[in-house]
Amino acid sequence: MNFADQLAAATQSTGSVACVGLDPRKASLPKKIIPVSDSPDAWAAAYTLFCREIIDVVAGKVACVKPQSAFFEQLGPAGCVSLGEVISYARLKNVLVIVDGKRNDIGSTATAYADAYLGQQSPWGGDSLTVSPYLGRDSLEPFVEVCDQRDAGIFVLVKTSNPGGGLFQDRTTDGQTVYQSVAELVREMNEGRVGKCGYGPVGAVVGATYPQQLAEMRAAMPTSWILIPGFGAQGGGADDVKAGFDDQRLGAVVNSSRHIIFAHRRAEYADSMGEDRWQDAVEAATIEMNQQLSW
Ligand SMILES: O=C(O)c1cc(=O)[nH]c(=O)n1[C@@H]1O[C@H](COP(=O)(O)O)[C@@H](O)[C@H]1O
Image 1 (tube, protein in one colour):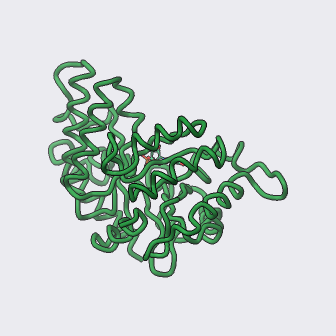
Image 2 (cartoon, protein in one colour; image 1 turned 30 degrees about the vertical axis):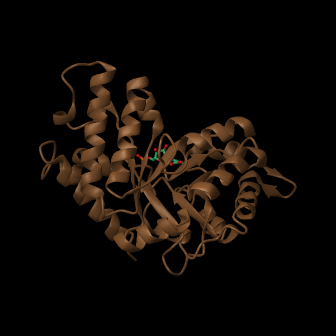
Image 3 (cartoon, protein in one colour; image 1 turned 180 degrees about the vertical axis):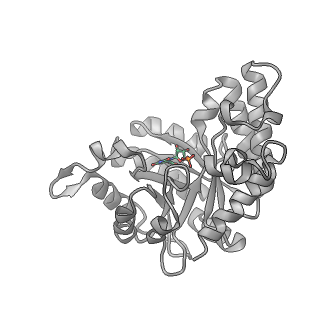
């Protein structure tokens, strides 16, 4: 089944359009998870344990998870082993995985990234990967070819959630902004690839922090899944993300990382659950997010 249909099936079977971001950070881990030793190996084992426990809580309750490679890479080689373990565990629990690597390079190198990350038979085993469009069409084509071969997907950075993203993305050339040009390419690349659900494997990233552009991008890329980060910790709310969905409440998944995985630190859960019941806080925050997104 192509990736777009797999994602549609996941949102339908779980009743959720949420994506839980797995962004472990040393300073925010629950005390119980913090290792005795300060070595990268010990932290990597802690990250694996932490993410596995989160996956146990959210499996069946959310559409997908999104491990953020940077936090694992921060630990060096041991962190990369942990990332691999986390991806495998999510797959074992039948949770779709978006690897957040924001990769890309010239075409021949892009082929190596695509081969490395895309598809369950790949070494990393991701169902999909976030990619940068900055190197142009020929840098995206190798990813799309591997998506076709392995029922995988990509999410191309179109309009990112950060305040400074507009520096390049909002620049106008030939009467349209850079992000509009990227969206046009994304739309074109899905042509002939659309699955039963009406969407294809070439998705886009558009931040919840730009609701107006989200509506515009929904219309500009009618067959692309949109990954919407920026919900929760970055200030995006349910009303902001609505415009990313079609009439059937399909076509987008909303990512939240810190607000879910470190929910034990949030004021509303700290007293009632806190450190000792951090998994309960993750569950409560997930249920709350699902409720917010069930208009
Ligand atoms: O590709 C992404 O996921 C992404 C794109 C973007 O424009 N903004 C953005 O925040 N992200 C990622 O989404 C996650 C957001 O985390 P929280 O702000 O903790 O929910 C991080 O892993 C970011 O790297």
